[in-house]
Amino acid sequence: ASGTQPALELRGLSKSFAGVKALSDVSFALKRGETLSLIGPNGSGKTTLVNLVTGVIRPDAGAVYLNGEAITGDVPHLVARRGIARTFQNIRLFETMSVADNVRLAALDVADDPRSRAFELLAELGLSDVAQTPAGELSYGRRRRVEIARAVALAPSVLLLDEPTAGMNETESADLADIITRLKARFGLSLLVIEHDQAFVRNLSDRVLVLNQGELIAGGTADEVRRNSQVIEAYLGR
Ligand code: ADP
Image 1 (cartoon, rainbow, N blue to C red):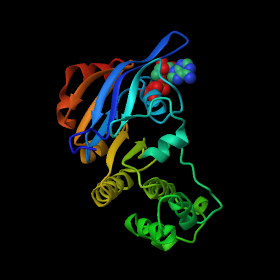
Image 2 (image 1 turned 30 degrees about the vertical axis):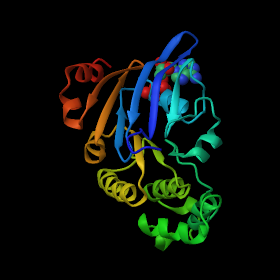
Image 3 (image 1 turned 90 degrees about the horizontal axis):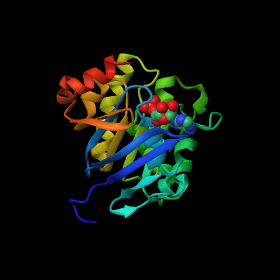
Image 4 (image 1 turned 90 degrees about the vertical axis):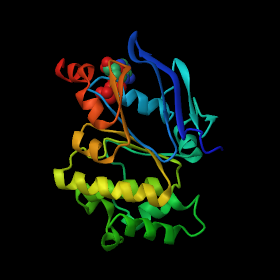
């Protein structure tokens, strides 16, 4: 793959549900090493976009490329294997299994030494002290970090974070932004973040895209987007 090829590219993605256009002709590219955030009011199509990219649903039109290869229509576990790891709005962990085992399981297929990879990730995410604790016993913020460790254990090229700060307070969100920035540099990730929290988005993003009623209506730095009148209207109009 050439250095200028996007990590992830969406071309003309459209999806309707029973005649309702959830996503209309959406195209953008996530550059290698970039952190791109996607924001938009409720019902703007964010979940539909995540589901299309990760193979949960198929588009009516358009295509998704990962490092230049079409992955459109691949099923979720194949998309993950090809290099897009994700976290979920509602955290999904093996609750009775230890934190270390949750992460080690994800590393089994990709690391020569899954155990050391798991412990390296736990250290990176500030979770070493709870390595042997059942995941279900951790605080919400820490469970979110375990989920991120597990996603990165898959050695993805693209990490997709679906509302990573949902349910977190301001301090937890700020800590998470720092952790994610470190992880990204350490593991050479390209990041697609779906998020509501404006402060978090501003902290983390190289670029922000705005969805409204299934269409991309703006893109730029967090500050540019925040001042954009179409964006202001989209949020106030709800
Ligand atoms: P967001 O995640 O930004 O809140 P969604 O992608 O969930 O937006 O929804 C976009 C639009 O598509 C909404 O009008 C929603 O009602 C509709 N929609 C999403 N999924 C379905 C579905 N499975 N069946 C019917 N309508 C859906």
